[in-house]
Image (tube, rainbow, N blue to C red; front, side, top):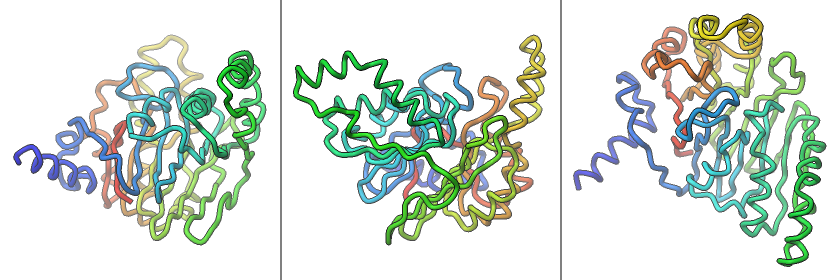
Length: 318
């Protein structure tokens, strides 16, 4: 009984974001997804491609709505995190990639392959910026010996016929009476084709910022959303990179050109009247001084609503 009560209290705090509490005291506990019902799951919350541990892996997110999984970004480790979140890979239907930086797509080929090996029998639709078709084609070519062998030896359907790729532009990507998914081009120099995504699912709306510089139009795109999953940068810690790496000035300039400061993330959320702001894709990812409380404090001066510090495998009811 004590454990059940503790689990209920902890999950309630997580789903409310722990407003008014010391955030780090709530979110440092291990969280076990319930793997049931309509939900949003953060699979990978690390900013950047460098792998430091399995605890926090590069960008990947999951929405499950009416038993249909929607994957948003497939950074390295996404396949394992999907399994840990309770997803049968053979049931995948839709994958969306915000932009072609490896920390957002590196696991795409392996994920598609593992879905196939798991028994995939229906189409997976991949929505991504221009270049994704050649990327997937190259993955098939690099693995054609294994694929062709398994088709002949194991009687599998050709995986290359089960994947449909859509090179996206700004606007509505999917629309039916209950689901509408839209893309908005954001600001990510030198990458031109980089997008935010908005998912309208019944009466709920979830927005993913993608990687972007401060972008006021995102507030209009996100107005009234139940969840805004926004990347975030702590500027003083980015400046400190120069102390740890030689000749870091070009890297620092690049980082600042296509990420949003914590204060500006708060401004977007405030202007959009977001119900829940979820911080994600933390930049920089390797500064141990960046506690949950520090992220929370950096946001609260510009956003008065509910702030949630993202963690891998943290989930939310929708």
